Image (tube, rainbow, N blue to C red):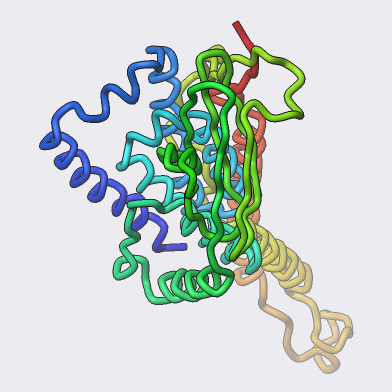
Length: 343
C-alpha cells in the first residue's frame, strides 16, 4: 500500500495541468454549470474533499479505506452535470478507483479489484491514465482488464425523450445518445442522468457487446411525473480532526503480536524470579552436599518482568486507541447526506 500516496500526488499534478488548460480555454464550462445552484456547487466541492480524505485513509487502513472510498464515489456521482465539466475531478475519480482497487488487492479481493479497475476504464472518457507512474503491478492489471473489456466489445445506446432534454452518461456529456446513431459504449454497467424542464431521472443500464439498447425518458416505471433533482444537503458539522486521527497508528497484527510478546516476557520473568535462590535438583538449599549451587535468576527475572510489562501495556494501549479511532470513523456522520425530493 505504500504507492497509494502516489495516486494522490498524481491527481495534484494532473489537476494542475488540466486547470491550466481550462484557463486558456476561458469560461467554456460556465454555461453548462449555469443551472446549478450555489448550494450544489458547495456540496460538490465537499464531495471532492471527502474523496481526498478517503484516499488518505486507504493508504494505511485498506479495510476502512474501501468503505470510505465507495461512499465518497457514490456521493460524487450525484453531481453529473458539474462533474461532466470538471476534467480534473474526473481524473481524480479515476485515481480514486485505482486506490480502491489497490486496497482490495491488499485484502486479497481479486475480483473486487478487477471490478474497480473496470469501473475506471468504462468511465474514462477523455481522461488518460498515467500508467507509467502507477507501478508495474497495478499498471499490468489495468492493461489486462483493458484487453478483457476490449474482448467483450462495444454496444450502442440510443435515448428518446418526450420533450427536449440533456443526457449525461457516467458523468460525461452524452447528448450524442439522442442522435439516430446513438452513442457507442463499452460493454458493462453504466449510469445515465436524464434531465428536462420538469424532472431529473437517474438509472443504471447494461450494455452488451454488439447490441443496441434504447432508453426512453421519462421511463414507464416512473410513477411520479415531477421528480426534483437529487441534491446534497448539509448535515450539522462535526469538529474537524486531522486525517491521521482517523487511521491506525500501527497494524492490528503488530499490536497483537507486541501484546503476546510482552505477556510471554512477563510470564518468563515471573518464573525466573520465582526460582531464584532455589536448588536446581529440588533439594533443600540448606543441604550443601545435595545442593552445591543455587539459581541466581533474580536480576534476569526482574528485568524480564519490567520489559514485558512495558511492552504489554504499550501494545494494549495502542490497540485500544486504534480500535476507538476505527469505531469513531465508522460512526461519524457523513459530510454530505443524499435526499431525493427534498425541498
